[in-house]
Image 1 (tube, rainbow, N blue to C red):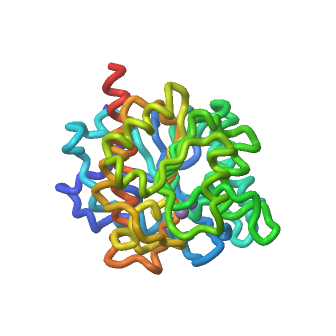
Image 2 (cartoon, rainbow, N blue to C red):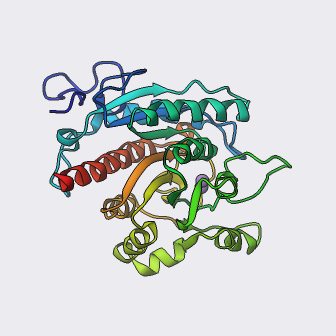
Length: 317
Ligand code: MN
Ligand code: MN
């Protein structure tokens, strides 16, 4: 049996105890006999509009008390195959993005050095750049699967290189992502100009806009994502604003015309056979959340990630 797993909510009520992701043990430092570390990166200085995503991790943890261990659709209990911990939060420096990038990268590196897969809870999307710096240092340039209403490939905002609107521009320029295995799904909304859609393609990525996903359907979109991701290591980033604000209102830059909770689950669920080396869920902003729908979805998306990892472990046995 894996060393670390969740509390049994049929033995102790799920509303008891100190909140960790899915009632997992909080373990920091040495991660022996650990496969996956869920961690918080409570940083929102990269936000260009609403702030408050620094409180995303605590609310995702709170909502995750409802996660039960068995994944019905995939007929697997991920915790039978994976030893999973809540690694706590990285001590970022509010207001100081470059210092925080150093700390985020170092925090991820500590996890990766122990051959553990990180699943990060943001935080705004600027955290993906230092995450990718750590990931690429461990694996070389990785494939990218990016669910987002926005491409986040501007070179700068307000004359500054690092915001939540720029991480993938810099990640590609720094050679952290292999653009031939990178795909962005869900782009939509009014943008500054048609350049917003040209830049990610010029950087070498594939783009499937929200309108295209609505036309293609979930299964065909997932097929394209799997084909693009290929066989090498892949980082999956899920900006919660991929989801329509009707379902995920608690976010910093909402865009109408997005996807339902079910479509989001189904899309992630179909990404089998990919060699994932890291994940994040970003842009959960509790102040604008209603009835915990956004944080509950984020908690469930992380459970989908764990299930994907467990299914690949099961496949190897
Ligand atoms: Mn984003
Ligand atoms: Mn976005």
